Image: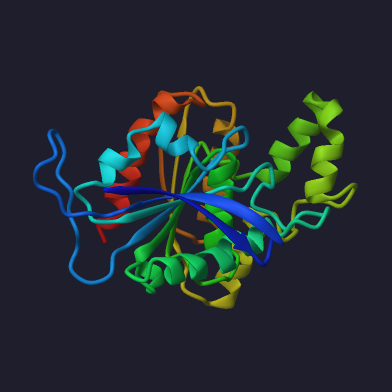
Length: 263
């Protein structure tokens, strides 16, 4: 595998930003690891970070490079700061950047990445799980599947908790989601995006979610999975013992890759 640290300019964000990228490489002489390359263009995972993390965290906290070495796929890990994968009220358009601009930039920089949305997965943890589902459901048509590990899938409930438990962070949430405007039913509500997608008759992206039973987002996940079922939307939903930690996510990302590639 090749691990690249990429510094580039985003027109949507209006600033320089970063991403870490893993690219397939055929190798035979590496001790303990074999690198594979697929015939034709290769699938790609856009692996999104959580609230306290950055574009380097997946490589620092998991063995993602080793996990994908024999799969012949690319991994794109972008920097999104504390933007919640949202077109924020303070003007930074992180949702547009991730779901629309970045896939095109990656295909330009790395032309062996597939153009087929069926070959592109958005996946992430916590805030990144929210961003992954959002990127696949928002109508951009760049992602054929999305996976959330301990995802903040009921953003209305999560935001209410943050406001109540961390009143000192009120300005942060107001800057991202707005002051006073309800999140439920808005462009930032995954429940609403899923409903719109269902009504539109567009192809529904494949959806996957895992959450540990000891995770503080567990009940939010259960509500969201049940809501998707009521909408008639299929979700591969899994739960097991576990909490909101990299010990769990390092294990679960391997199941995500198996699920995505087994299609």
